[in-house]
Length: 107
Image 1 (cartoon, rainbow, N blue to C red):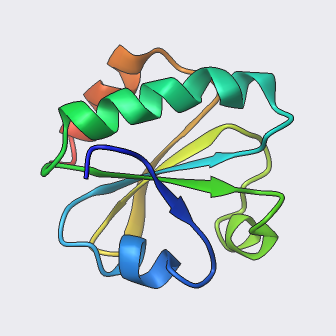
Image 2 (tube, rainbow, N blue to C red):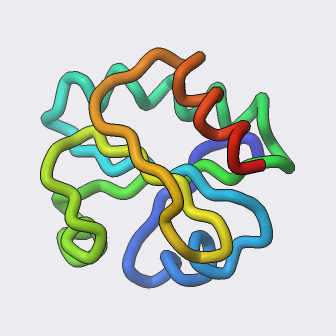
Image 3 (cartoon, helix red, strand yellow):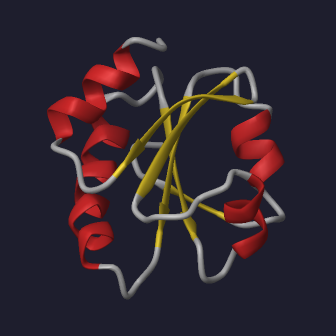
């Protein structure tokens, strides 16, 4: 793996809900500057924590239904899923160390 997985309505259930490890989902959009700042951090986390955490990204413009299901009002929004359910959430372009700290609490 080692890279963020693009999520759509077709693969959300398989990649996030049925995952056997915690999943970090990045809700973002192409036009969002803070979102673009977070994207390389997501790829770094995906590589460094491969096997411990799965990293996925949801483009809110393409997947408005998924964003609405989780009441995403601001982007970037990062939601940690464990056992198919959201267990933690972060909003904004946070530093990598803060994101990893939150993730480690759920591993």
